[in-house]
Image (cartoon, rainbow, N blue to C red; front, side, top):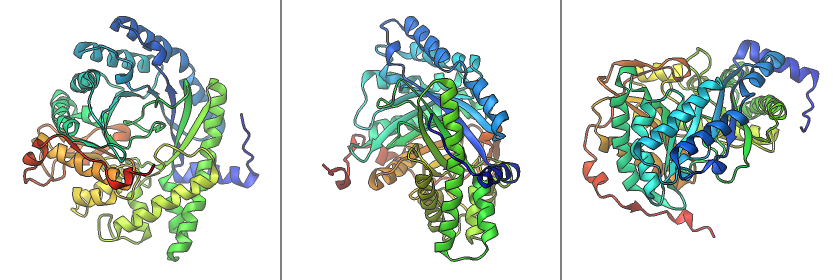
Length: 456
């Protein structure tokens, strides 16, 4: 394990950030390859998956608990990411895919893991039979499990946008909503639709263990919106150059603390250290909000004019600070703007200060995309698909990761609220454009890759 040298002042400063500013390690995520679990028999495949996951991650909960006690730095979630199931499922069909999801869920339960990601497929250029079978099984798999998270990559700068897959995902989201209607359609909160998905993201619901990753790896997600907020507040009305430097220095300190914990976890688990994902991931707790950071920069309420520029400044400064602190910053690293998980965003949406259109504009400069957006339960599948297409187009053209985690909440209308609980928070149901996108989605086929793809 490479040692990180911390001065006494840095250690005291970190302790203060934990005590007063809600600094935490949002997740230790163990990535596990399942390629050696492959079998022609679904029962054998499931046994192999269960055995490997529970063997590799058997000490994750204990190590996380020990590190929290020893470092005094809260570790909020323990998670696992596995090889995209579509790559190891062979000839599996409907009920067999659900059985795989149930196997992953049982493994996560036995290991006391919060979430397990990787019930996933990458279909940006087309769908194989096994991809189509996995996508068809998504509603039942998500409804029948508690901890399993899924993601589908439907586009990339290199390949363009698979509009057949995007059209299908609108219907999948609707079916998932109905199957989990009794729980606020929470199944949709465990499903992400990506463009330009990354292979080392430790955050759920989009985490999976990519094909270029080692057999197992430890990735860490750090979060400190409260730390950044207080640093900006203490600085007062400085100019943008000075403000950027303050955010960069703060991100540097947060990243160093994250790498310290990540490398300690990797050493004790006997698993290689991967990356630190420095993403300002908010929670519903007061003071742990990206929206409040943007408002402290100078906005009366997030969503007003200037919000996109303020978010661009924040995201860029966080990335620069993290890159200076560690050679292994990865994942998504930047700022998340989930509507249900950020009290400032929730307040802005309830006041009408922020809409889905403004959120979409802000995603062009943030780390992910439209995240945890609750919309009316009767939103047409084609509208959901068109929202995904818009967001994927932003990612494709700008060569960045974008994603949609949208929740049409069964039985709810604009102005209602839904409570997901825990880190997922609560959200107002916000309006979508009621004009139809049906003809657009019905064209199907593939939107070609942009000129930016021709980089060889």
